[in-house]
Image (cartoon, rainbow, N blue to C red; front, side, top):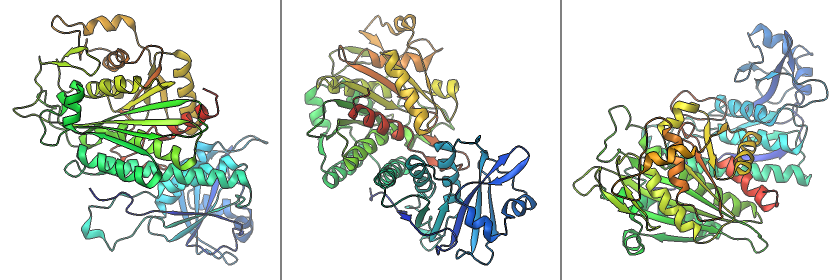
Length: 509
């Protein structure tokens, strides 16, 4: 597999004024104030160049200020940029209040997408704090993403926005610079995850994913250990081996460790890494196979998170575990009715080979528990049931500690990711009882996402706080792009995990 990042967008904090900076386009914000359209803070110089009539001109062009709206218009004399792009911010905040971070993030992402093919854009959106500067930078960098590594015919075509110049931020202010540096690290690593998710499964095999992890480890000073199929067999990793048994591309378990000399806590992140999921012998029906390269999105998310932790130098130990396998049907594949002996020693009757993610995660959870981390968080595109429950944009959160589950839900909201806390009903556990083995990998049909969580909970080490994120809905976006969200892999949960690591480092969790 070739390296990630077909195009990298540069980020600068500019002290220039909106009227004097040379760029291909100047991005401003507009909002609704009752029935009127108003120009958002940061665009005062631009409005002046329009003789104070920018809002009126935009209204004539049909602009309403709604979120996701973008209106281009030629710049008047007095501006160095030839084009002004007005992006909607929704309802204007009350007096004394500022725009929330997610609104700014999405607006910046929309602008970056609309300006695809431009070399440089100046963003004159409202910056009331360092947090605002970071949100705008993050949104713009995420919105500028494009995956074109396999489009040979388009080598000379337009490329994503090459440079984001952020106006209104303060380059010499430590908080503003730190926010920009953080935004750059987070966005670039989310885009790394997106690249991995979008890579075709004939190139992103378990072994190729492991090589990508080793390369990142070398680049960022991370300790990487790869268990191949021989080491997995010797170690008794029956879950991972059972899932990968039908493929010519053998499985891997990858451990990526970031350590900080001042760290007082350790966070273990575990990602489901099914590089392609056919369903195995329990083959998926037609129409459900085409996007199954995305079934390693959880592994991509935890991989990117540990790299961000290293880039930011967080004072917390973060270990990512990538449980990698390809789930294929063949004469050597695990069959419905087979019994696997897991790494924990428990036996599991496989009633459905398409419930494979929980099998690879269970082995990784048991192995991670042996290191006695302060908390374990697993991330997976685990169940269609969660998509039915929460839709395409919201991930579910389960945990063995209600306060921890609530904390992660709050963190997700803080960083702009949609999530919802889900229960682990004890009465559903008995539906996984097996007459043959210690337990089965399936229970009753209703509540399938919760049953998957109950299955994983069985493998968490005693006394360890654990949470499970089912990102099956938001991990891969099949519709039209919106805000900073592209078509294809999204990098869902990375921002939540990074913030979780930051708060763990600060001793707040």
